[in-house]
Length: 151
Image 1 (cartoon, rainbow, N blue to C red):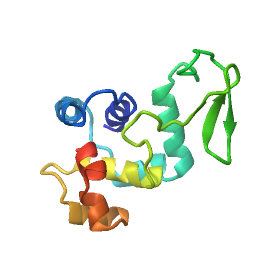
Image 2: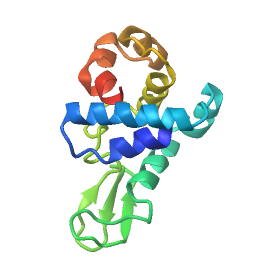
Image 3: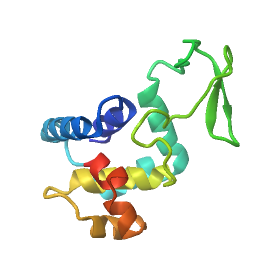
Image 4: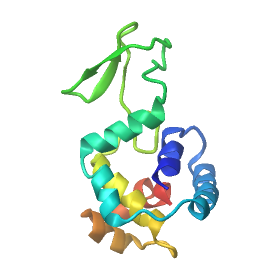
């Protein structure tokens, strides 16, 4: 389930409403074909910021880093800024650039938890319940940036 949602988040190039409809359709199809992952397994896989970033990297660049500006295939990771810098043109890009997660102040772990709770609840999850589960304020969970993009 997580692979599909992350793939959709990484390939964010459409309007938000079109993206939401596409995510819903693909999630329904994917959920029908994929066994449910347990909460403990999700925590084991995506319980740290590093694990979430590695997953996003793997889905964004499945064959290794490719610079979006020049196409060069080599980069350095700048730990202080958490970005990759192309060794060819020095363009800096993060794993969240150009995705639903771009320019967010929420840690990736909270985004991954939101993805889990929204996708695992058959009837959908309320913003209030989501806010309590992931430890954010109700307005944060209710705003389109979080709840609608993940749904």
